[in-house]
Length: 215
Image 1 (cartoon, one colour):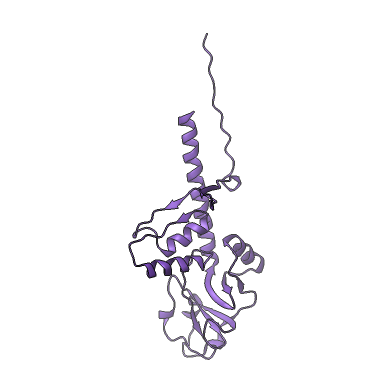
Image 2 (cartoon, helix red, strand yellow):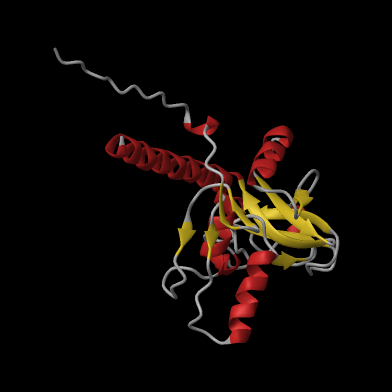
């Protein structure tokens, strides 16, 4: 007589699975993912993206020590994977060309003196600017006031997403020491969160395959 053994697995939803691990004794990871230290793979943007997803990106060494230090400083200064360089204008300025808007900066920030370290007042979205009939009018005639527009630099993607939902905002600026660090759009938060779920699902599938083959 022969007996058979069945293998039963129970898979939980991806948002309830914990994949925390350690890269070293002092470097914990939320997901076991590391990007390669190659000049075609990991620079500032990749390292920031990996950190936001819970993994880690290792900056490559094919550059000068000062350039490498600048990249590391850029990564350390941000909590979200958006290396935006916000364009600032004063309310009395005019936007006469769409050159100030691009895929990485679809918004212009309006500050009292037109500089990052002055009080943030409002913003202008590129999609709204293109609809203006008269491009010669000053910014204060059509800017959107910044009520509930800023969040602390220390906010992660989850906190930023919750704030956007609560305040019904499509865009917020992260601020550190009264200076704007980044501009975060709602679609970016949703895109990155969706990517995170895909990464988690991929890791889970890989672990299940290992368990089945090894079992």
